[in-house]
Length: 286
Image 1 (tube, rainbow, N blue to C red):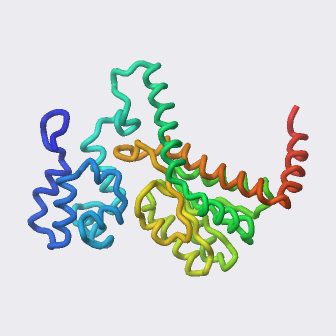
Image 2 (image 1 turned 45 degrees about the vertical axis):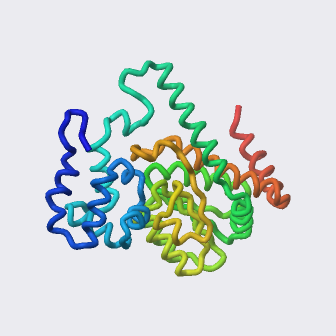
Image 3 (image 1 turned 120 degrees about the horizontal axis):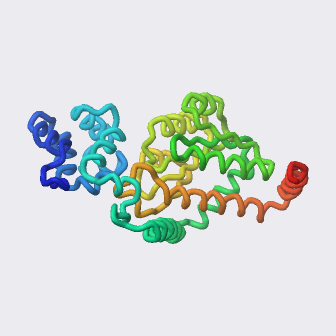
């Protein structure tokens, strides 16, 4: 693949130069990357492993052979190599776009993500998740980076319904909560890529302690969705290039709003607590 200045991206050249030194399994991964660099940017570890016909561990090993500490670090480097800065922010926007065009494309991108995500929602799984959350002793919510604000939003909504919800956006607190989790607890793990090792590892710990795990990721197989009891997915056009997920976060919030509203509407017992909270908060307004 050529870059804008007519030269091959440095990372792809590195892969071409190193492929002869790789194991047979690693060569499968490297060859797929060379043939499909734009697609790989949106792949999780599991997706690339499946497409290459190897194990997840082989994908990680290939990245380390190439000099990267993690698969995510490799993907960031690949994205920097083959896309423009504008594409990294919003792939539909061009440097010459005017303000009106930029605003229009941002809004259309968000609407697209919402429409696509809605079309993929499994209503039965939403109802099942709402029931599990409603009856949970505690709900631990894990999110890092861009998922930080989404995790806090879910905590805020569940607490208004009188549900014991704790959002942890620090990886150490996530591990501590996971170790203390037990049967009757729920872990709601949020990761756009589904490949955040901190989130996946904490979810695995909680599941080992017999807590239920609900995941919220982008569409596709990922390490997080693989271990979840219930998986929810967003679909957005941004995932081809963008490392910072923007429209997908809107879709994540819409799924969380849906869960919150289902619980509130189907569980009359939570409405008393909701009204008491609203009355208490009224005192804080002029």
